[in-house]
Length: 172
Image (tube, rainbow, N blue to C red; front, side):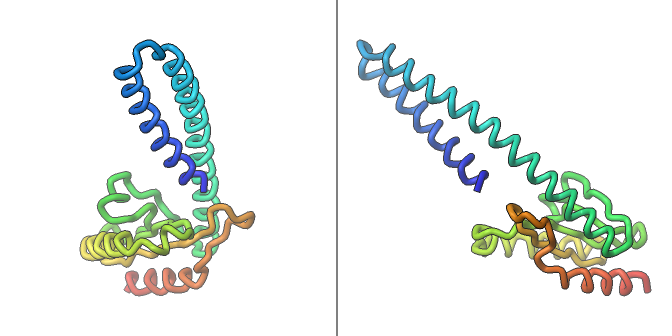
């Protein structure tokens, strides 16, 4: 929800900036009045979006740490942070190292209406996960969680058994 508001405010800001430029061209006599008003609105949007972005980032970090800790506890294995480029290349946030050549990928995904409706996202993730499996032999598992839920828990808890099975398979 916060991210939707943030996107909306950024779009509004762009529109207001465009309006300000148009007003400056068309109504030179009223320019100071419009400029002051729009600048104050733009400043308010900047302040709000900055704080909102910081809150979202902090909230995402807290949720990620909690889910990460839950995974480590349930699987009793070290889970490592994936390099930054893996996020775009493979759709992987974390990984479990079985050997240097055999890894299991983990992707955290908040459950919300947008993520469930995005077929393009699903296709792109499927392709990215296939690239990971081809290179590292292990599957990529998507951990769904409810970002605004009081209980920061894994929504698809049954995935832990699948991860354990994949760990056993790769250890053979």
